[in-house]
Image 1 (cartoon, rainbow, N blue to C red):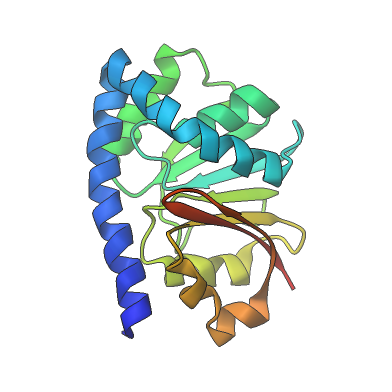
Image 2: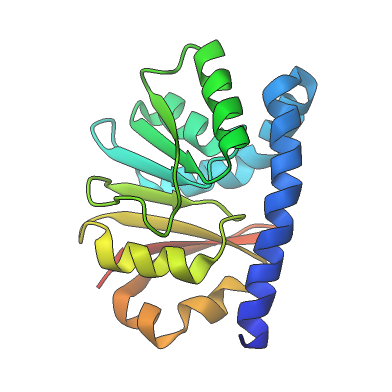
Length: 193
């Protein structure tokens, strides 16, 4: 694995554990939930606006975590149905419990799933969280399986994801339709070529 790829995976692994801890707390404690949503809202709002989600569209949130804030913001703000997946059964159970407590089960479904083999062909919008890894495998799966018209938003830490997107297989599969820069992250709106 080259240095840029290793750095991407390392950052994603660390962020996975950090966000898992924060989201477990947020799903159980109102004070932590408010802090987390306040921290995430500026970036997520811009990303969701960029995706231009319509109410009739099907949305997949890969790496939704125990507190699926992007799923919540999309479902509540755009009235679209969101399927959140995570490969951690504890995160899935906590997210399901949170969604049920908030009476949002008609808008959000949370399932155990992995971004490298989950069926993507019914989704119009795919949102990949910053802590999803291995990102190469998830992007390869998206390139092969997602709808030709689907919109894909993938997040990276600082500028490290650009090295992955510059790989030949991804340059051939996707075009970068837009980029958003945030203080500590970067988001790419990808479309199939």
